[in-house]
Image 1 (tube, rainbow, N blue to C red):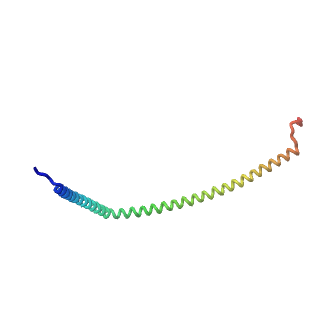
Image 2 (spheres, rainbow, N blue to C red):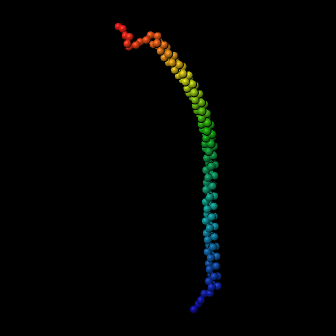
Image 3 (tube, helix red, strand yellow):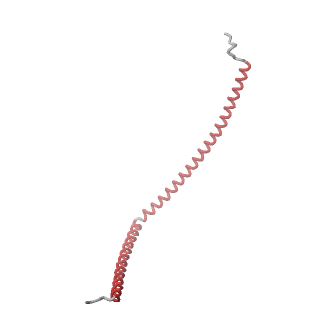
Length: 130
C-alpha cells in the first residue's frame, strides 16, 4: 500500500493552488487585454466620426449659441413687457382708488344735499294734499 504523507499533501496543494493562480492571472490578463483593445477600437471609431462630422458639429454649436442668444433676448423683452404691464396695473389701481374716493365723496355730498332739501321741504305722508 502506498500512503501519502502530510508533507506531500501540503506540497501538492501549494503547487496546485499556485498553478491555479497562474491560470487565473493569465485569463485575467487576456480579458483585460481584449477589453483594452475593444476600448481602443471604440475610441478610434469615435475619433473618425468626430473628424467626419466636424463641420456639422461646429454648425450645431453655432446654432446653439444663436438660439441661446435669441432666447435671452426673448426673456429680456418679456421681462420689460411684464415690468411695463406691472407699472400700468399699479397706475390703474392708484387711479381707481383715487376715483373711487372721489366718487364716494360725491355720493356723500349728494346725500347731504338731499338730506338738507328734505329738511327744508318736508315730504311727510301725513300732509298730503291733492
